[in-house]
Image (cartoon, rainbow, N blue to C red; front, top):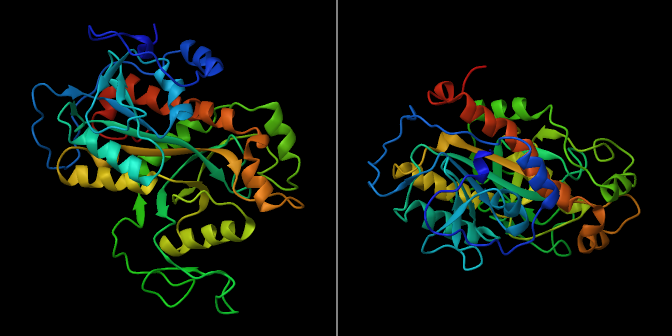
Amino acid sequence: MSVLSEQVDARPPQPPSARRGKRLLRAIAAGTLLAAGIGASTQPVAQQAPESHARRVKVLIISMFAPEAQPWIDQLGLTQAVPGLSIDYPNVHCNASDVCQLTTGMGKANAASSVSALIYSGQFDLSRTYFLVAGIAGIDPSQGTVGSAAWARYAVDYGLSHEIDAREMPAAWPYGYFGIGTKGPGEKPPMDYRTEVFQLNETLLQKAYTLSKPVTLEDSPEAIAFRKHYTYAPANQPPAVIQCDVASADTWWAGRNLGQRARDWAKTMTDGKGTYCTTAQEDNATLEVLTRGARAGKVDFSRIALLRAGSDFDRPYDGQSASDGLVNYAQQGGFVPATHNLVNAAKPLLDDIVQRWPQWAQGVPAN
């Protein structure tokens, strides 16, 4: 039996209200995603003793809205209400192996509120939890294609900035977007907000990427046809597991100029080390809450992995308008494969953590 289908708790599970990913359900049910067991973390965090009634969580999957969540929820056996969660997604879904899933609601405010409510509810012991933040995203066609799954090293906030309307900016500027406290584009701003950039555990990142890279990802006839509009790789290639970084902003943007701005901004904010490839909304908010939770001894920040799968391109193909690419994004055919590939790409990492727990209990194994 798959651990994800095990039942615990005498309370009857709540029926999921969102659309069900039937095809992915069958794929997951054919194998075991997670097995039991977790040991003590050796990470040097000042952890507080958990309350005796708190439920221990081994793996927490953080989704942002129903289509991302449903492939996981369909395999999890119960729900647990937590005060303060989104009214749209009021339950945490868990099973007998202490694998749980949270849906935050979309956008930074919802993500921060829901993750905070979970951490400080007192209902869960998250001190030894591995976190998987997994959602869909727009994707840069120079780095990946629709359906590709990208593990991130950096999450860069793409909303904390100055901005001047491009029609009013100095003639020499490439765009009107620039860092707060700077004189113009290309200057790195002071990190006064402390949420501008997050860097995740490199060892965990490389392990996740290595384990998942051989996976064959799901595709769709619509995506295969749409990719042919792009004349270059990897945009016109099948989806793959890749490693590149995410820009977080509540604005759902599209276009060549804004896309180039995202590339430049990621380079500026990471001192040239980051490579932008996916655009999403929530990640910097989620990571800031987890950072504060780590300072409070509630979570271990070194156990966070961030995965984004491309559901649509962030800029049009030659001859297409930006507005057409954005408004008609569903015609690209990447939405369903992206939601399914979150699980397909994450499964090797989650399997390895659980099946080789004696090694993982001491930290990320070297091999």
